[in-house]
Amino acid sequence: MLHAFEHAATPGSPLDSGTRFKEGHMLATWNHGLVSNAEGWRLMQQGGTALDAVVEGTALVESDPNGASVGLGGRPDRSGKVTLDACVMGPDGNAGGVCFMEDIEHPVKVARAVMEETPHVLLAGEGAREFAISRGFKTTNLLTEDSRKAWEDWKQSAEYKPIINVENHDTIGMIAQDLEGNLAGACTTSGLAFKLRGRVGDSPIIGAGLFVDNEFGACTATGLGEAVMRTVGSFLVVELIRQGQTPQEACEEAVRRIASAMPTDDLQVGYLAMDTRGNAGAFAIHPGFNYVRTIAGSATLVDGTALR
Image (tube, rainbow, N blue to C red; front, top):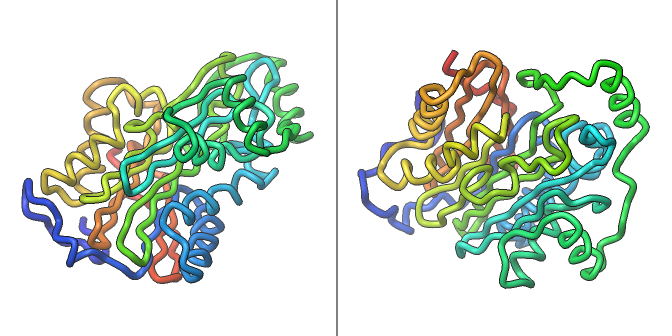
């Protein structure tokens, strides 16, 4: 099913820059996208870029202690430590990320600093933390009382069991097109609740949790990162858009690749994508995945379609 503003592209042909949608277009996973997109639109109205919008928009979600899967208040690993992953990618193809980082509330902002201030793409663990501190980021105890209690309760059984569409393993992924028609994206998470120490998912990995090609489109992923990484999902979606598929068709194909490669009864993955002409797409393995779409400041919470 085609979404609003969606039209088929010519297979294999680059999009004409003259057809770019320039009214401000943002997509963000889950209902916390209402907050991120509102902030992104506020910045765009003040002359901010798509990159400004996705970084500052997702940073607001990172600061919400009531969110159990992102930033402050995120669920810890099985040792009781909150470790954060994030990445950003801009219209010029530059990208930055951090993973397995502790004590820093805004990994998405650190990821932007990695992109803009270092020759690297990804910093990990203590190195990422030290880099953040060297750039003026303050250390913060990310384990809230609610997250600590959830960890204490989990230790009674110590059973690891991801639950589909429940905030023990979901991200906020946000992609945007600004008023100049340029694309950017960000993805940030605290990862799987009660994961093995050192586990890193798809969210900080360019091509897995996020990919942006300013000529064709952008995609972000949510759900079980291991499945997204094994299929390089976000890159696949954007590549299919480049080959002429609509964002919706591309998201559906990427989900089918997962379903054909591994059991999906207890596995959820959702993809969210846009092209440069204002077309959007979203698809998940199971029902329950929703996202926020904002066009020219008008936001809608949308239930994505699903394979099962």
